[in-house]
Amino acid sequence: MGGDFELLGSASDETRLLRDRTSGYSVPLPGHPRLEPAVGGSPTYDVIVRLDDVKAEHGFRRDELPTTADPQALAKALVETYATTRAGTTPRIKPISGSMRPGGVAGGAHAIYRLAEPADDPTMEQLWLLVRPTPTGVQALYHTTRFRTDDLNHVQWAHLRTSIIDKHHWDPEQPRQAAPAIWPASHIAVPSAKLDLTDDAWVEASAKARDIGPLADEQTDALVDILREIAMTDDPPAFELPSMIIELHTRRIAMCGPTRAAEAMLRNLEQCKTALDLRGWAWQCIWAIGNRDERDRSQRTTN
Image (cartoon, rainbow, N blue to C red; front, top):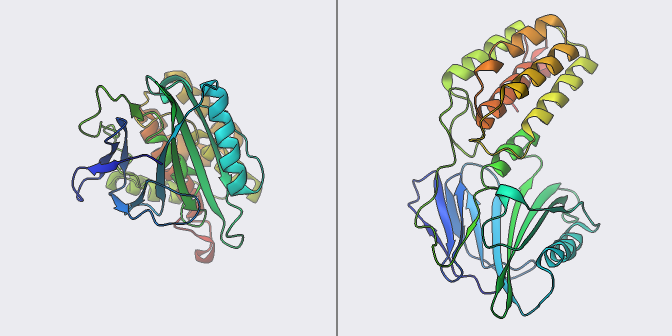
């Protein structure tokens, strides 16, 4: 391990920059992050970062590897070894490419998997691994994010995950000095690692819960599945939505649920301009479905 990490900014900042002084790697971390001691055990880290706003933690480690192996093949092999050890089985491994791969990085791969231990407390972990060439070999940057499934649902995890996947930076000649902006302005979602709605959006969520009307169990499941799919993309919060995306989601919702429910959910979809808006809208609709007036109080949910 060779990382020398620091967390820039103050404890009151919603987003702070984690930076490796030695290599120039950095990533902004939202959620009021704070450093934790990297105690012994397995796996080993250079630094651990806990989030105060969300029950999740990040672990970072940078290794120096004297190898001439192909960087992309090496990244895949490192992820496979690490993740298989943690999960007990080999998860699906995907390459890191496009805007998610920082300049100067020659290889990258990622995977998400359920940890084998503790078996009685389902915990998910994502591994994000970057490989950068050096004169003597490569540097491998391990970034894990871990959370219990009881603490984050599918939509909340998608919101947290996409807030940083395109924000990794690795340039020893021009290291970042401050955290870049993550959250665009939104009238639906609060700019925070915790997926929350604005006051006006909560008013609309309650109105939708009143207006959706009765749903059969299979209709409920189908609508929630679609809303999860809408939220669980790789689009970062500031991604600007093309009109065709809004049109596609409108058709899917209209074809799935009763007319009354579809009209209630869709009435503010066209106001969504960014991926942050869209995830806030999806969460608003899921909450409304789970708390609609036609449900008994014992059936309602706040999550």
